[in-house]
Length: 251
Image (cartoon, rainbow, N blue to C red; front, side, top):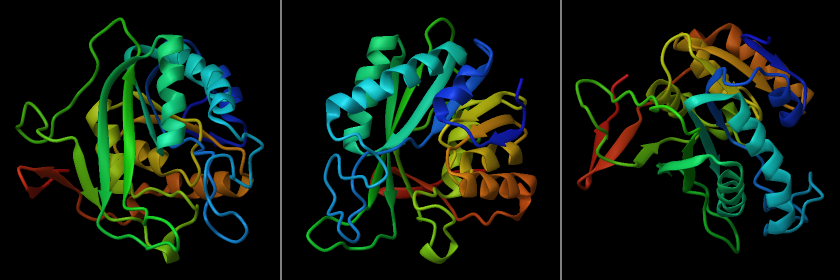
C-alpha cells in the first residue's frame, strides 16, 4: 500500500489502489470545470480549457465514481473535505448523497487579499464542504482549550502570485487547520487532486501519514519536493471570524 508518496496518476486510479476503510480523511481541491478568465476563456461553466466537460450533468456523472471511491477508502467516521466553486460543489453535493456520504458542515474561507477582474467579481472567497462516512463518530479536534469552534468562517491570505507553484495553490495554514482539526497523529490523509501538494505538506508536517496523486507531472514533482521538507514552508496567521472580530487560530 502507498504510504507517504505522491504519484503521477488520475484521482480515480489513486483511490482504487487504496485499501477499504483505511483513510482518516480525504482533503482535496478537485477541478472546478469553469474558465479561468484569461485569454480567450472568459469564464463560465464548461469553459475550462483543460476539460471537455461542459454541463453540470456531465460534472455530476464524472464526480459520482470519485465520491464512491472516497466512501470506500474512508474508515467509518472518516472525513471527505472538498474545496471548490459553486458549480463543482453542486456536483459533489449530489454525488455525496448518491453514494451515501453524510453532510457534516460548510466552511467559508475569506481571502484578505484579492485581485479584481474585468467584467467579473474578484475571487475573495472559497467554499469548503465536509462530509463523513457513516458508521462511527468523526474526529473533531477543537483548538486550544475550546471544546467547540464558534465560527465556520476562516480568514487568511492567498499565496502570493510570485510564490505559487500551481494556479490553485492553497496556503499551508489553511490545510494545517483542516488536517489537524479532522485527523489525529499517524492517521492517513489522502489528496487525490494534490496539485502542488499543500495538503500533503500539512500532513507531513503534523505527523500524519499521507498519499497524493495528480495527472500533472510537474505538479507531482513540486509536491514531492515540498513534502520532503515541510519545515521550510512559510505560513501566515489564520483567523476565525467570531462576533464581528478576528480571533487567531491557535497552532
